[in-house]
Image (cartoon, rainbow over all chains, first blue to last red; front, top):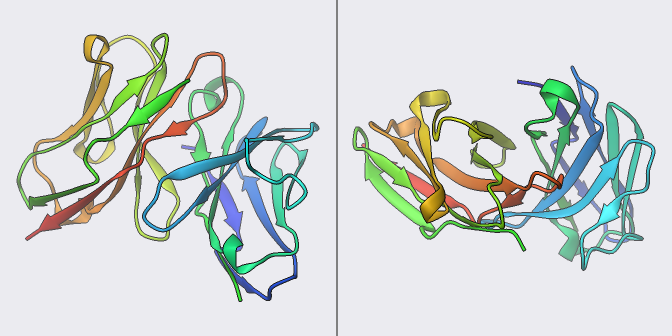
Length: 117
Length: 113
């Protein structure tokens, strides 16, 4: 399968600062990328969907000004958590879909554990 | 709206025993169906998927799943569980006209030696 690399794997930041998480498709062009949030022992909740070159589409209840998503190229999407607070601490996972043979499933990154102190 | 139900939050089996994890979906038509596995602190790995055709699909690590339209189910099975299969398992669905992958709540599998 295709490889999606997410970086960093974990990050600790101070309350009030911003954190950027990168999601890269290494061997295919990701026309669509998805960002999920996962609380401990819970399922993945879709935060937003982004298509390359377009603004992200956020799910209901997700603050677009707090969770900035950029999908500037076919291999890179970023999620920036702005003015982070302890309640933003969570596991964030990205996934990517491409075209053609890369379209029938979403490929997931390894996830990023964010801890806000 | 689409939804996925995994009735079993936690399942415990002995190593070598058979396994079946249940998944039911709600959707107006036949969606694409997936099973993913997640180890602690890790991303998701695809076990198998159903897109069309044969309703019994084979996946990696000896897993299989059967799509039953009449029951709106896509249960995951493995004839003999290994200790390394202990993980969280997620069933997911995506509609034909949407990009969104909707996940079930997950089933945590514990394997005893």
